Image (cartoon, rainbow over all chains, first blue to last red; front, side, top):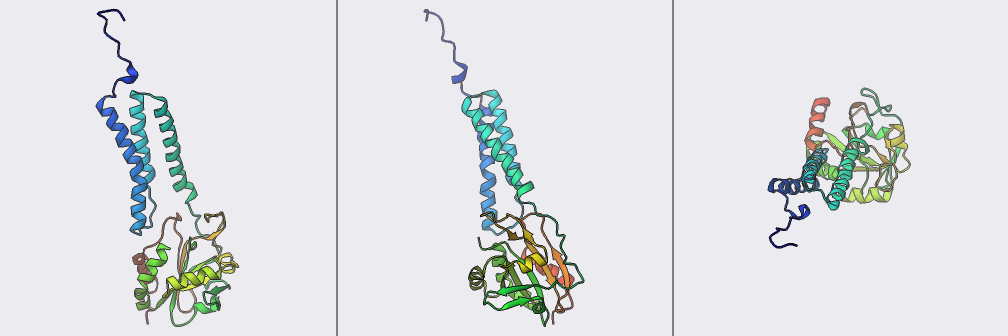
Length: 146
Length: 115
């Protein structure tokens, strides 16, 4: 370098402007905060659809994209793509995989349950006749022990 | 199992409404025995042959973690004469009625059948 010349700073080594860095960090916090909240929800036995997970993920992804537009790096782009796939997966999980079809079977209000046979835990049979007696019955179908 | 735990914890409130809680899944009898041991105040039913689930058309295909079928979460309220009084199916498998919501449904659809 000639004497008197000042080194031209490398744009890649310039620190990101303050607000842009905050966007990136806030985006990451929001992305991870959703699943953490979901675990808290489960711990508190609240069985509702956690829409906040993909919503927070989407907002966080948006913030990451904003920060990336100011300072693009290969790792940053790869990270945004990966997180984008995760967020898309979260939306797909809740909107498609977790959806239940509306009930369209033969059970109708005002009619008895169709004839059936199942087995109690002690091995004795359980049929539609066992639904009649001195008590009402709340019949709850659950998915299993897992 | 969160739902079953909640039902077990509130079993006395169902009993006050002259209502027993019967819980059914397509798991085998061994699993049903474990469930019955864990939740002694519920009546646990094994529907491994899927006779009940197929009869009322509740099978949710390929919904178990191992890819197997499960019974779609559904609540059916049946009076003492065996007549269906109410049926609830959530829109998502992540959703369950709270015990308070189940008791409210009881109070709404079977208000005069507590004795």
